[in-house]
Image 1 (tube, rainbow, N blue to C red):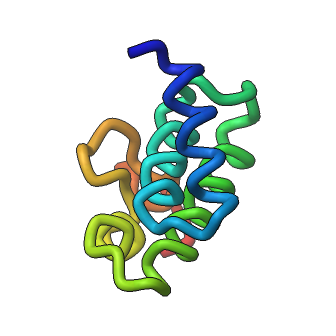
Image 2: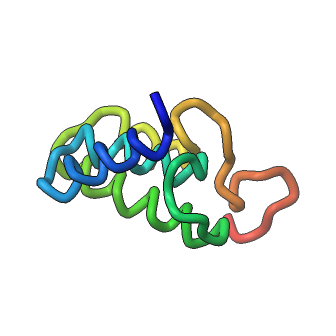
Length: 88
């Protein structure tokens, strides 16, 4: 499936408050697939915002992503978790 089409689908679901939509749209932002191009900080902030919404509704994957500070598949570490990063 086309990444942009998937992002549109997840956006509609996320806007309706669907935790799976929020979680998957967060993944799209984290991987920068099918969503508007943003700076690394902005896309990670949007992914975290979406995962926070999904986690508040009990979504286990979103909770794990927030707890680990990385996307669930390990594609992109948050800056604070990268070797040599400061602030944690």
